[in-house]
Structure formats: structure tokens, C-alpha cells
Image (cartoon, rainbow, N blue to C red):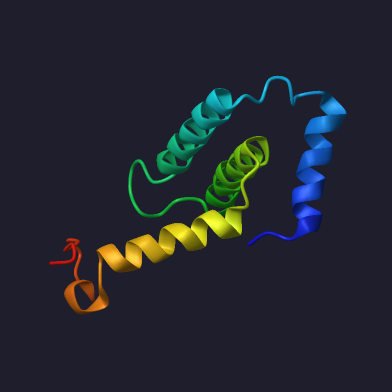
Length: 106
């Protein structure tokens, strides 16, 4: 996923400002939802969003996800791969390829 250098830079940013005390799992989860809403807002009036605004809002969402993972002590690669394995089982290719509506394993 992200490089250790990026994750270290984010941790240093928070530490330098003493924001760790404010970054509870609850506050971080709220921040993820807020930033995701701001990302969605880029597309509020149609598909032609400003690319820089989209990148900035996506960076905010990812940043808060990294902060939450750090706070919870979870490895993002591990949890994403674990969830992907579960999703692959739930939605097998032969039932879901090219379909917009998900079909669970039967």
C-alpha cells in the first residue's frame, strides 16, 4: 500500500502537533466519513470533477484511514487482504463477472 516513509511522515506530522490525544478511534472514524463526503461533493453536480480537488479529498480520506489504523494497531495490508479473501468467497467470479448487482455465493 503506502510506503513506510509516507506512514512515518504522517505519524511525525501528528506527533509534532500533539494531535495524538485528539485522534480517538471515534474522532478518526467521523473524520473519514466527513472527508468521504467532501470527496463525493466533488461529483455533486456531475461526473466532471476538478481532478486536483478529487486528489486532495482522496488524500484526506486515505490519511485519516492510516491514522485510524495506526491508532488501532492494525496493518492495512493485512486487513485489506483478509477482507478481499472474504469478499472473493462471498462473490465468486462465475456469479459476478461483469454484473452491476452483486450475487452472493449460492
